[in-house]
Length: 368
Ligand code: NAD
Ligand code: IPM
Ligand code: MN
Image 1: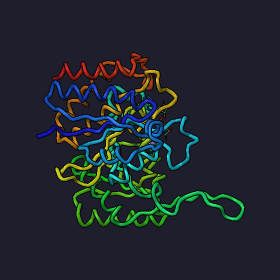
Image 2 (image 1 turned 90 degrees about the vertical axis):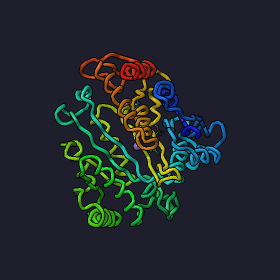
Image 3 (image 1 turned 120 degrees about the vertical axis):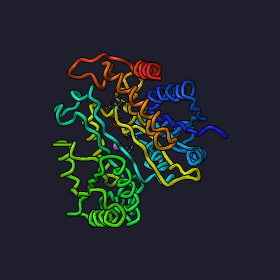
Image 4 (image 1 turned 30 degrees about the vertical axis):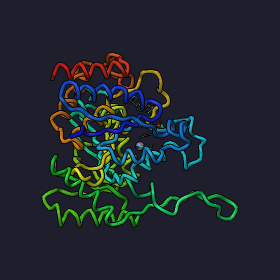
């Protein structure tokens, strides 16, 4: 039998820098744990535009569809700001999500004890935090029609449309309930049913899925603005949050600061099961290409490395190996290693992207 396949798309800015560290981790699992993967690399985002005039070629799209898992670094950057909207780097990522039908985006926010003083919130508010935001990823205002910039009289109008079908809401709700059953058994659904019809439908459908299929899981509903406030006030009240594409984007960046840095947050974007029973999947850090620090060895590779841990868990059924990798990350943080984004109250030790990756490999070696 051939090895499971991973397609790596490093992308732009710090994407390739953090992905270099992930490659070391993948190689470590191959050499030391007998987990060999067939790894191929390809272009996405600005890098693909520079090479092919498109942020995602059809060939790369096909490779992504065929891979057991895709790992993506980040896309975008100021160099591409003036490009036509249709070929912007971000369009490459959105095409991957849409065509692979990756409707359920798991964005865990976990506060490692060693970083509890790095959050902008008080230690007692964030210490021990372990929540997951389940963001709908293939619909809503990101993809709804009509959209565009059109002339109306003598001025331009920018149009985007929030649109959700019942089945789109139900399937992401199910994935949140399934996840909750493996964790704290609690789901909070966030929308704005007070001002948006799509929010009314969202609330109704999530409630119906719970009533009929998951009566054992506790469900609450919150308006997304109040949810944002509660996330900052007392985030430990949550277990799993399920929300739409745009609210999920905003809430997950906010949740990043509960963990100390955006450089810490991994994500898994999951779709329907493939022939092998595993979900179609793309793993990527929540952060972007960080143009302000790109090329300086300052990027924190942990979000991307933890995204690979999620791949071990969700695509390769290697939960114990994922635990091993997460424990190695926890150890280097407990040892005081800090990339520049984490230089906070205790001063920490300044390490580069490469040194952080090497330290995680050393911690894996020590625990193997
Ligand atoms: P960003 O996430 O790139 O950066 C926000 C801030 O966080 C910056 O100060 C950055 O230095 C810091 N940061 C982010 N990741 C870090 C890491 N791993 N280590 C240390 N510091 C880190 O968001 P932005 O500046 O709003 O966007 C920059 C570009 O990235 C834009 O083109 C945007 O569209 C794109 N973007 C891409 C993705 C993605 O590929 N999934 C996600 C978000 C933004
Ligand atoms: C994210 C990013 C993307 C989004 C962009 C780059 C398309 O912000 O993954 O959080 O808005 O979904
Ligand atoms: Mn985002």
